[in-house]
Length: 226
Length: 226
Image (cartoon, rainbow over all chains, first blue to last red; front, side, top):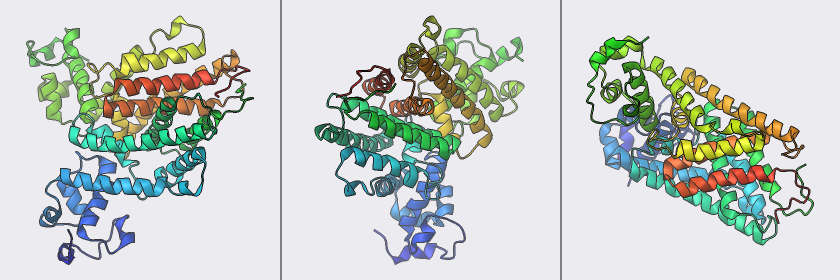
């Protein structure tokens, strides 16, 4: 898909840019995708112009169309990179523990510390939220694709809640769907709010309350909130 | 601020438009604000052009600038109307009960049924979420204004949680900040997700899980999730 040819379009001494500089060498296609991810997250998909993309990735129009037939095609590549990034940041360490509830806790910690607070890589916050809010009523095909990611995360949470119940870490009578919805909505909401107020303290409080909530579902016979 | 003059700019037989038709007669300024609220919620503030606004409200440029010096000035009027709408929809019935926890339940029911599901008035979902996600890294002054609304909602939730503790409806040891953050994040997240998947079923489940969560904080000595 890529070759040395497109490097002709690039100034190797590009003075600005954050994400891709670290992973030099990156080919033109990768660079367009990386810079578009940053732009989409900051400005949204619709508000990011082709010129914004070309300028940020130091690509020519011809260089761009060598790799993508349209901005919408680029969208899917950007989404794929964003998903890999999400998994790399949020799932790390989960396989080192057996406890499903501990896995959920690790994911929530990762989400807060490794994913949302990593404002260098994603200065505009979580790209899935920006894109889903922006595109919800405008681009059904793109929303469908975004929704797959949300569904995947929900399925993972639901699976871990189920396993937690089976292993006796969570009360057997708790409603898996309800818990999943609340954890998921809590994650989404915390991310939206962090995007607005950029407050580490409040993000910490929101994620801590999600973890407290999970803890409150443990089947302790003496459990009492009073 | 408004007068009969600007009606000159309006075709009274305008065939489309939903929100303002019902409240006829509405003056030009009100109509611009109402239509802009719809547009901002569907497309965002930055992606809504002046031409979009003029076309939707059937205003002339002159008519617009009679009332607003800029799109940013319009933003504040739109926000004010959106806030009134939020309160009218979400707070109804809360004063009819004494119980603070019941007040919270009523608000969550309203949020789901009267506010989010009212897709005729707000076809693009909650305007505060659309605008805050869109503008987070682009318009600090507007974000500051949006943030006031979020803070106000959080303060109300926190106050009701505190009152619930005082009245013995919630366990005295529960952490008001944590509960507030979770309820607030849950509301935000449910709204984001509803915007994406438009699923009444999943919205119902998300709000139901928030209400279950509140119920789980009651100081029942025999409370046990197993």
